[in-house]
Length: 305
Image (cartoon, rainbow, N blue to C red; front, top):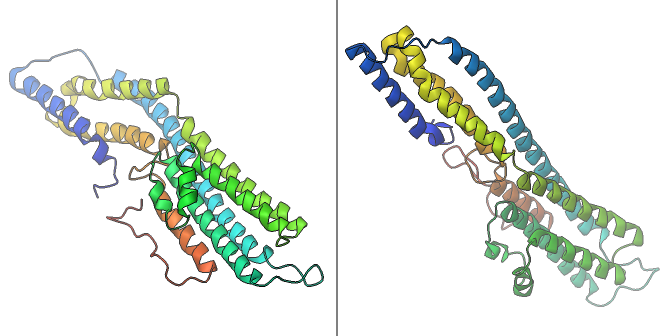
């Protein structure tokens, strides 16, 4: 397995340190050069500390990754809940309140579809927002041209869509389609989505401190490139093999931490936001009774995007 592994990111560095190790071994074993009093002891001490640092950084990165996944699990739940609320709590008034107007049932059905489609547009817009992608045309199937045009100048398009949903719920309440008690229920669902989005934006906008990452990268680099000089007097011709294995471990851990630090990106091991939003779209459209649904996202070479 090559695609999706850390080897994709680290192979140039791994090749370079192995080449250096091979050159050091050749000069030492063939010409007797590079005889030093350097032993493996300092490398053992540094390696222990380096392993602790890498473990701490990777745990921190994974915590960010897992929190991002939990937040998107809440997006899934809140989307399904809000769809159920729209379809069950928004409807014609009771007969004792006022008679149902002519064509009002069709108007309410259109409102249901519009609201659910706007919610689908929201989850796709949130994915694009977190990935920094300006692909507004992906929302064309769910929003009309006027609303798409209104989103063009918006800096935070998901929030603009939530705002529009709130306005439409108020209009439904003014028409008597929503009981006053249920207005708060719908508002709480919108608030939940806004809160989850804020959590995702916090992860996106607050990376691990740059100085910490730079320090770790430099220590790993220096350690792996100087390791052959500490091993050559001990393991002799096996230096390239040992250096390759040790470097693969350290470079690999370093690369994995970098990759999952931002869980909303498009690296191989980031969250499959495309698959999650496709699943939400299918679930919500099925609640509308639609049958012409897209297929669930399938892994491409074992990876979901």
